[in-house]
Length: 524
Image (cartoon, rainbow, N blue to C red; front, top):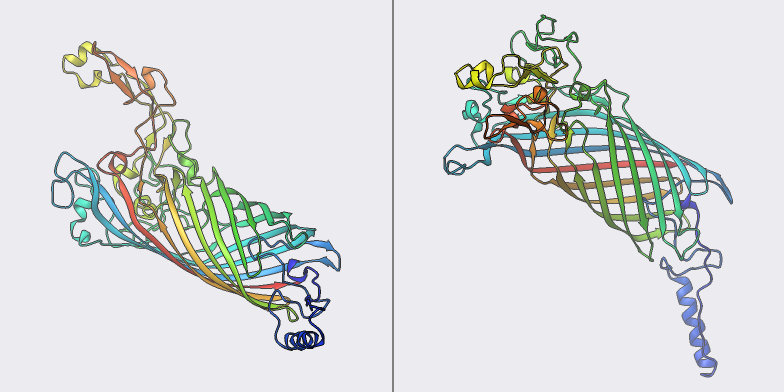
């Protein structure tokens, strides 16, 4: 472990001029005696066997190892607590001509809907095991102690719910205030490998370069859309195929999995994270930077499976990329007792690509009893045997559509997962690490994160990447001047006009998160 390895130093060199005579020599000897009696600075050795600096790498690029000279095996166990509090404003598109909204004929996204709040308390556990020099295996397990979500009125929106939460005529998507049930459990199990390609502790002329990969595996039930206050006769966590939300199979278009579910806590995905960091200690400071990318693959057993159809426009989780810059400051070290103090100042920029995700409205929309969200949609269309241009012009509406819904095809249900538009995030954090002894260290820190505004529910009615025959095109067609039709794509079965049509979509603004974290590490 690098915390036990130090670069060999030398005695401080004192140059004494010989041409100045014995007086200058006596003065030099006296000065050397004073320096030897005073406390040594971190880069001024006091003995021939003492290091010039504690040259171990910082927390970010430190890798436990094994089979080193004088250190056959290393093992670290870490535990920590983290609490995050998030707030955001939910707004919606509107064409209502009113002050602060729209001038009429123009769609804005300024209609106040709700104030969103979220709180998460988490207990983190991590085990690092050295495999060889600069190579380590680690296992992480975040245990969520409590995760809560709530929607309340925003600047009086609770008094106009029939407008701000309108679905189809006479329909309201959900009610304010809205509260999700508390969730808890193991978020995921992560297994990873870290390797130091270069290590300043071994070669002080080079920086420390870490590269690692991590797999994340769900071990708890995936999240399901739920409400803490269901209406009479309804259950808290109804299956998406349970149209009337009563927990029973009532036939019709309902599916066979209508029993009440648990709220769940995992994302229902398998994740692959790749990360690399570079640092270089220069006396009392160690600047660093790095990149990280997270790829997630949905599990068919989760709610992603209900919407995973060929013509779905977006049914994958977002890709998350991360760039990090920071500096560690080491103002004090006691090399004899292996103790020290490190301050870490860090800035992180993050990009979330478009993807189907658990948005701020996941529970509210997913547990809605609005028919436009509860009724199923079908995977494909079929030829309309009654289609006739002449009959349509003659006034028969049944003859106007070349294709109609094929109710024999697969049904798709709304789960609460939404097509979240791309956005960027910025986070600044500060922490302090106190190494209390050779084998123990503690960390305490805080952070602030801001998410850019972005849309919730960006599904489009047609997927232009798949163009079938006119018989299967459904609404994805364009009428030509001669009355015939051209195919523009295939219907997207996840498109719901009440939340996806222009003028009906939701947006997230002013999303801020404050977090506090503390951890302890025992090194063996």
